[in-house]
Length: 112
Image (tube, rainbow, N blue to C red; front, top):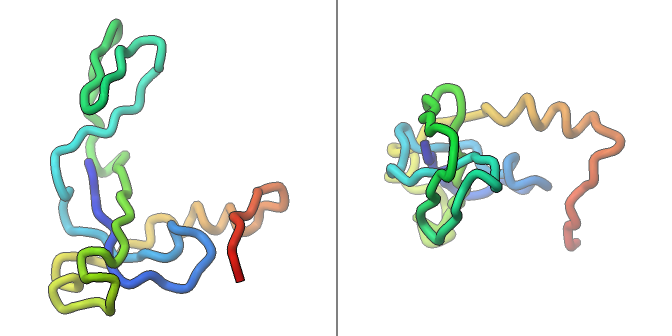
């Protein structure tokens, strides 16, 4: 499922640490496949399986975090509409904790 992360970004290094509000439900029915490339004929919007089976994973076990940011509010402050259509989601915190403790992880380039 495809969930949108919206709102005014926090001033933090990583994208996954800047947006902590997501839509209550999946935003649309777009399919974001995970597959073995040699078993798929890839096209622009559709991918044909050459072998294997399709399994649709439940949104509780895997989802696409689509980071839209503040574009739905013209890059301004959070609006009542944005706050109403989203909820706080800190599900990326565990990943951030591991990343922040990692000495070998490559840090993104940030202009100052």
